Length: 315
Figure 1 (tube, rainbow, N blue to C red):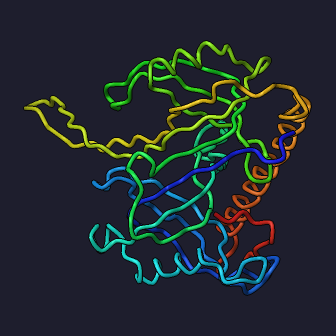
Figure 2: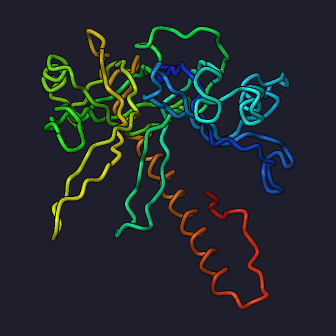
């Protein structure tokens, strides 16, 4: 198997807004009492501040594992303390400019509000170094991704005028995080020759295609006008529509060799998929335990308390 699977994202632009918090790790954590930053930082990658890309940070401490000061922590802390401005609060002209090198990961949970509790897997930029910059790169390079991908399915989808989305091809398959865990993902292709190319690969679960792709991240909200005819007239309302996508714009000329020791063996992928099933089972178990503890707390008599367990699933 390849020692390092490619999985990179690059986000550059104006600090748009944030949902970052400074927290302290609890008594049951590996390093109790450690300050860390958790949350989401949103970056406007275009000069009109319409394409807003979010980066999630799970656990950023003031000191790195090697004992050195963590520059990313310092910048995120400066944003929290408003020493670096945001577009939403301070205006674009006073907002900080940053460059973030992150990676594609998944935010996953089981949706207890939907019958059958289906698994939800949303792509997101996870972690990465943050650098303050004085000048931004060209707009077309401010929200990009590059990743090795095992393609297992390609499907054409018609345009949706109501949601203002174009005709496209959905490319499904697997990418890998920094631990080489397998992540099921789907990307879009909107350039007609590229759509034909991916359809022509005839990729499937039995005959996957392993290759490298590049593309851009799109995350925009538009407003559409909807007219409704009522009993005594027509009403007009404004409906916001969000469009978020990873759009492939390039693929390498020749795919990697499949089922090969220099790239990845089919047996290795099977092992990683089996490991993923164990990971998902653990998510489900912890989420069920968390929901059960909430129910027990509601049912407890007035004045009593239900102790939290270390296994409680805390969102």
